[in-house]
Length: 410
Ligand code: FAD
Image 1 (cartoon, rainbow, N blue to C red):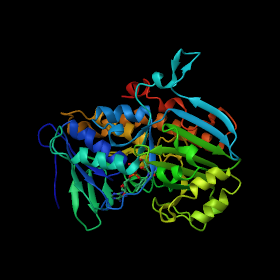
Image 2 (cartoon, protein in one colour):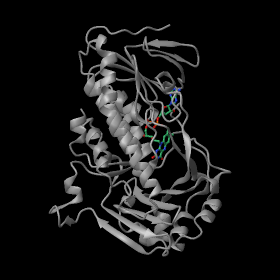
Image 3 (cartoon, rainbow, N blue to C red):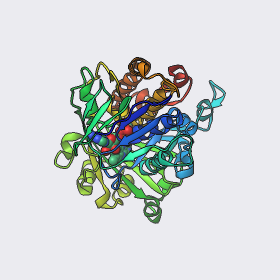
Image 4 (cartoon, rainbow, N blue to C red):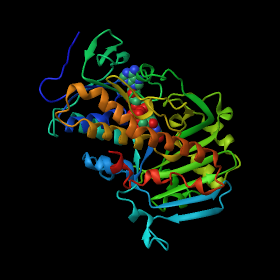
């Protein structure tokens, strides 16, 4: 049994899961001078994922932590286009244009840029920032192939699959939607369930789109996010990775891709089935999604979960998807995990007495709970809005703007 107890004025912090939330928490807590170990079940050798939104609320925090997503290829979001399924323009919104009411452009009202990043590139940056020996604080210890099977919140201890145990002062459960840590908080023994929809997720190389006159139009505006709506399905497209790829998320009733859908992130989808499901859409968009390498199409069931009453128990706290798995309709999954992580670092400055850990974790829950639940509720509403009301502009709720809510909440 390895032991780790607080010596001096720093805490020993054990984080379960090296996803976006766990790594951000590790970087932020390391900067506060704590000793941080992260336990990740995978070898991180097969990281998958397409693109994710880094809205102003997330970007403000990442920048304070020294992570500038535009330096590793994230595209700025500058325009939103809404089309009918058959390709008629229904709305065009240039975020750089001056709004007559506020005499400012939308982007100028945000405190930080809104970026469209590749998940793997973001994840790599977070990993190297956490383990970089030259950054502030002692480098984070990243333990790969270390699946956590049990957590004891009272003693802040964890047990790995191979039987080894580790003790700390705090355990943070950042282990995603199928969290083991969640089972240890009161009322947390709940399972996520399908919301009735699935999504194909994949990238199309920009070069492939450019080579075909039928699809060339889609790569002309680098900062454009486009949505094609039918009654019960939609296609969302935006560029990322220095505008070298187009990211697609195609959302439809789960029953139509039931044979292939699963709740993992690396479930392979069938390109031909996808083209059938979207057969009523504009031929140009279908030509574009048909350019995907069939081996790289993923499909996943969109999971929802009952709101749980608590995120903490004794010396354990949940963050990110472990606490509140979001539907993706607002692009806030990574953003709110990043907010949770930063809140924990603010609540645990260097010198935090060990005796205060449980109370500070309760405070963390008080600060974050209502905001996260409101975002989840809003994401559900956007998912159901079918493009017919003002909720339809993907991601455009005030939660994303990065205004003073973040500062108030800390
Ligand atoms: P996650 O990013 O899911 O991270 C959880 C981490 O915990 C994972 O690394 C997992 O392996 C680890 N873990 C789980 N259980 C254990 C355990 N028992 N012991 C140790 N470690 C454990 N979102 C998108 O919007 N678009 C995407 O393309 C996309 N791709 C993804 C690909 C992968 C491989 C993963 C893991 C997630 C993906 N997501 C994607 C989800 C998105 O990253 C999260 O919704 C969001 O960033 C919140 O992050 P999180 O840290 O809470 O959870």
